[in-house]
Image (tube, rainbow, N blue to C red; front, side, top):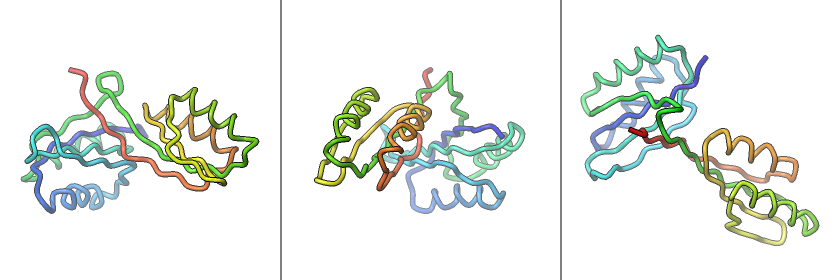
Length: 158
């Protein structure tokens, strides 16, 4: 199944997120990632939804989304036609001897050290989802104590 990134502009009202999520749930589709934010217009929000499915299924989901009363616009964010980013915060268990290696890895990924304690280092990294995946895999051997990723955000290049 192919991964799709769907951007849904909606009226910024309570209950809209629940209705959109309910549409996916009712059809048995798992939302892999979800980010919701206000836009340049305070009364409009955008939901960036990452879901797996074939083209036929995704087309049906988009048609159903367009039928919801608070939905303004639905668009498929194709990888070459949009800018997609994600943020990850990773807390790594480490001893002083391993810190230089971790600092170097953070530098390679242009990540930022945001907190340091005697036993842990917390790093913030942003970028394309594949880049974040690569960063996590390279940092994993150092001992991830805690990890959290934002949902993907996407903006059309047009």
